[in-house]
Length: 98
Image 1 (cartoon, one colour):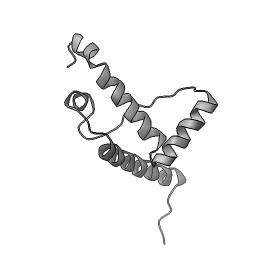
Image 2 (cartoon, helix red, strand yellow):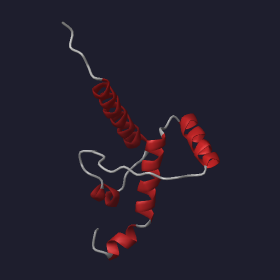
Image 3 (cartoon, one colour):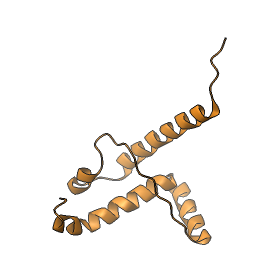
Image 4 (tube, rainbow, N blue to C red):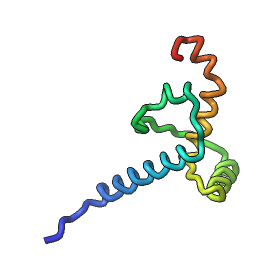
């Protein structure tokens, strides 16, 4: 008798695979610098989710750009966040985080 797979299990497996692929793309596209590596977990696990309400026209343009570059929206957001943290690391250094 074949093992039945629940839909939620299948979706979770697909999401895990997508996250792995996103991480591989991130690693090949973005060259991380030492300060960023200090705040990104070493195993590449992503344990935070964010939500944002954005203008629909802006979101559509963002998605179109990412599709044409072969990057997921999630990967693009991760790159933007990494750049933002890198550019503002002096604030973290002031707080003794770095």
